[in-house]
Length: 216
Image (cartoon, rainbow, N blue to C red):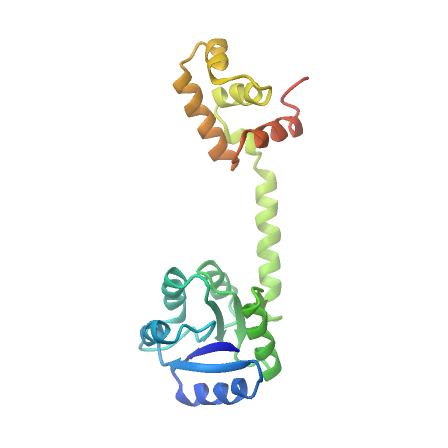
């Protein structure tokens, strides 16, 4: 059974959602809350699998703040935001804070059930009305990243050291070749790895080959 918590400041909404969800053979509403603070306390008691969370719950704690708190303490729980707001900024903020889905309150019952199952199974559910905004953000981000040449993030000295590492020179050999200390080489190597997001030396080799930085 998928254990679900409902978080909404309107009791009538929680009752309606409970009726729909409990009618499913694989779902059960195990608790509900009227605001974020109550949701955090209920989570300690019930350990739900999926939290169906409203964004605006005046005067209590809103859904964004609560999502951040719950994901910090219960990283495995899936948070599905359910709101009237179709503003893309709310969508982006919710996803950055750890939400697994974004559903509008005017969605049909079967859409909500589909969304719950999707996030429970480690998927992502975005309501079709706000999904295009997410695609636009993704495309824009990729365009910006492509315009920034990662090689230009490196200092001149780091650009000198990178191909030597790729060619297999040891730190001591690089230090002697460039008339610097071994400790300085190690520091530059660490900076290169961090700036380019590498984890091992083979990443540097592949990068150097791709960028035509070495001549075998």
